[in-house]
Length: 357
Image (cartoon, rainbow, N blue to C red; front, side):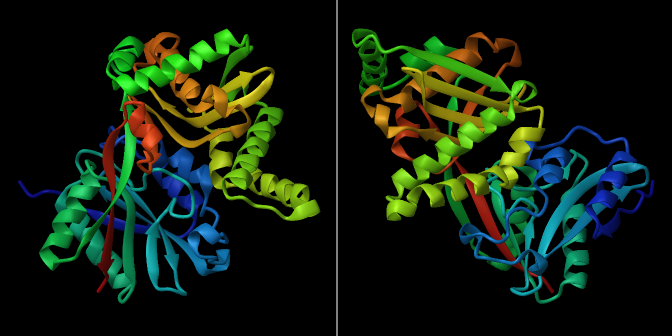
């Protein structure tokens, strides 16, 4: 029996991509991630191109093009690209955001044959460009295909360490699995709060209950932490620059996603009536809480608010949200010691560079 051919379609307008996506009955996504969904891509757009973090590319330098692969009435893949005509580089949508992973939407029917066909059609359109697949989760289908493709051409693959804390067995199992030193530090956090009669409380916030006041408070807190961490001091003008930085955080693509997506989740810790730490992320039922933002106030470092935040978040996920069956608290990119000290396990994002021809 002759198999139906795979059809490649390219779209320049994101609204046309959404319309096309909705016109098909889609199968289950092969690699689950909030960062690889139509709602996230729609909320974040092209991202924040004009940023020191991403090389100060002006928005008009970046153009969208999205590959949609279908076979008869079946949607196989949606691969959204951002094309930088100035540098002749092509990235995945999300490159100019703080997303922990990048990739594409595809079903289990998306084959290496389809991947190779997509590479060929992309090369026909953008010969001489470099395709950069960044932040690709190592166990994803896209990573396996890209590794196979790069191996045939002898192209190197770069790795970036990330950390996730396994919590599927519950809070007690997580705590007992920590090192002796880490358990001691967790105990000390609670004993100091109790001994010094410091009032503390938690405030879990879901998107449907989030307010503009909440969003502003976290953005302000986050900006203060960045200024403190990086020793930014502009003298009397410091409050002005901090206010401008806070406003910039309010319009970041990730802030928009955290405000709009129903999976958004926040945990705030208050000590003596003041916010001492918070984390913001996306709650994926049956999988993980992935956290792109976490900050603490060093004013309360005596109580180790970061450890309190992680401990109480795991407790909340294991007890209050046990029906969500959360398996990991994913602290994402970077392998800082505090992540490993709290039971984190390293995994990797991969980065591929491919010359199109």
